[in-house]
Length: 54
Image (cartoon, rainbow, N blue to C red; front, side, top):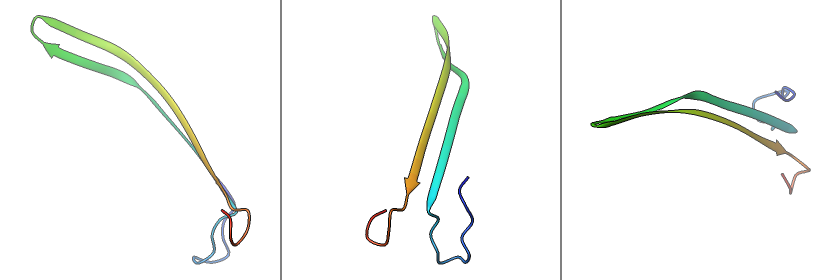
């Protein structure tokens, strides 16, 4: 996401990122086999407030 810069040397005024994970962790050691469902979500952002701050 975010707006596109006019050229490669300009920085974006803002950036937003999101991520996620859905799956299983499997432990297959004898005699205790275990399967755990895992869910995760993440987000981050960057906001340029000016030349000296950002």
